[in-house]
Length: 155
Image (cartoon, rainbow, N blue to C red; front, side):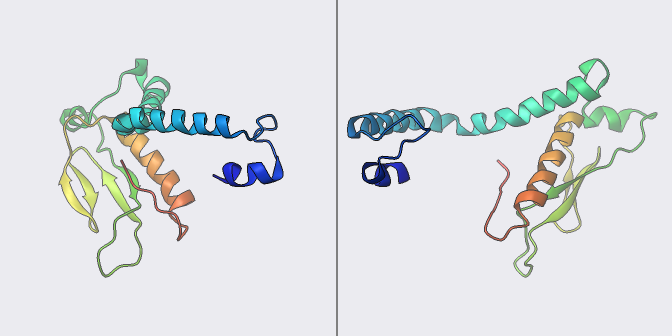
């Protein structure tokens, strides 16, 4: 919008080579609106691509032969120690609280905390998924949610 408003006045190019022309601007807006309408139904899948990529990288780099294990396998294996992975929930606050950041625990038995409550762990949730969630949660909580004007939500 800034290029559309000030482009005709200042003749300043965008990306150092595209000068404002009404016909080019109109065609660009039509193409981008059409592209937005086509991709909108797939927004959830598009946003989750980075999460799936991160999970795959974790599987390939940190698990033996790239084989991930789900939490149910860890729960049933008597030789495996009790795995406790912590993450951050950065958009939950009770009505009487100002702080929206909470710690959450992922175990083979339950997921949750005393603040947000506990639910049974889904048997299909894998260790790489949990690791990816906790890494993303830490990044969001530290770099984005500490600011008052930015809110990040899980999808």
